[in-house]
Image (cartoon, rainbow, N blue to C red):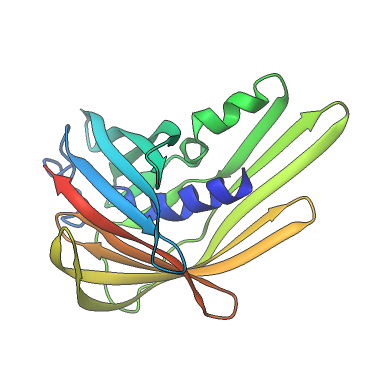
Length: 230
């Protein structure tokens, strides 16, 4: 559960998008029915998962745009790992992702008969990015009570910063991107994990590529945009 939440938490920061028909940034255009396919590769550049995202609902209320995105992730053999949806909004020149939405519903199904508390801060992305800009930290924490015992888990994303601007090519095309770096720390019982990420964001598309590194700076894996339609 911890590794999946950590993965989803890191990935959602990049894939959050906002309405092109509102005053939201050109970095996060949103259109109902738009689809995105992301392929994740492991250490040996072998396909591990393929995730498909679809914007299924967009609503506007005054200066705020809200959206729901459906997510289906499959392993390298095509077997579905999970299906869920998450919510985000765009208002006051920034995009906000609902932190509770980062916990896939299928993962929570196994804990439905237990007491669960989810807390955290919504992930924030400004609508305008510039090199050297520092971004707000984000976190999500889960407390599960079962038979008088408590299981606590947390994921923190810190040191978020716009590093540079550069061009990157994936199977979906070549894109001019802003590069965002951050560190992610996850804790569950006695197990702790720390890794860093580098994220490429393109105008009109959103996340194009993401790389994750272990605490020694060695590449752990990557995720790239392999197809999209709007």
